[in-house]
Amino acid sequence: MKKLVADLSKCTGCKICENTCSMAFYKEKNNFKSAIRIISDENGSISIAVCDQCGACKQMCQIIALKTAKNGVVLLDKKTCVGCLVCVGECLRNYMFYNDETPTPFKCIACGLCVKECPTGALRISEDNNYDTIIEIFGEEFSHA
Image 1 (cartoon, rainbow, N blue to C red):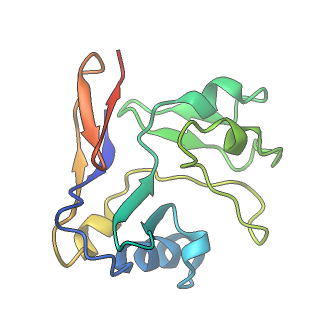
Image 2: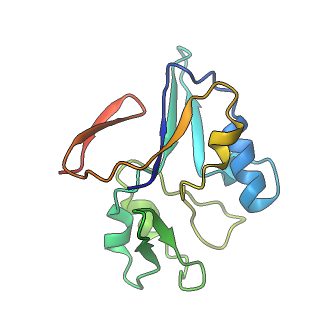
C-alpha cells in the first residue's frame, strides 16, 4: 500500500510540505488547502496529520465517490462527490480535510511532491503491502490487521 510516512525526529515544522501541497493542487500557498498539516503544540512538539489510507472514509461514502486504487491509495472522484462531507466526519484521525473555498473535501494521495521538497528528509513514500502488521506512522502505532 502506498502512503506518505514521516520521521518526526527530522521534522522542523517549516511547513514547506504544506505550501508544496497547496500550490500543487490549488495554486496558492494556503495551509488550509493542504492535504498534509504540521501541528505544533504549546510545548513545541510537532505532529503531522496526513492520510494513512485506512479506507474508513470510503466505507461511509454512499455515492461511492471514494475508491481504492491498485496501489492502495484512497482516491476521491471529484466529479461524483456531492460534497456531503460524511467522509470528513468519518475519518478516524481527521486526515480528510475540507475548506469552504473548495467544492469537495480532499486528502493525501501520496503523490510524493512534499517528499521531494522536504529539506530535512522527514517525509517518504512507503510501498508497504503488508496490511497485517503494526506500523508506525507519525510516532503512533496503528494496526491494520
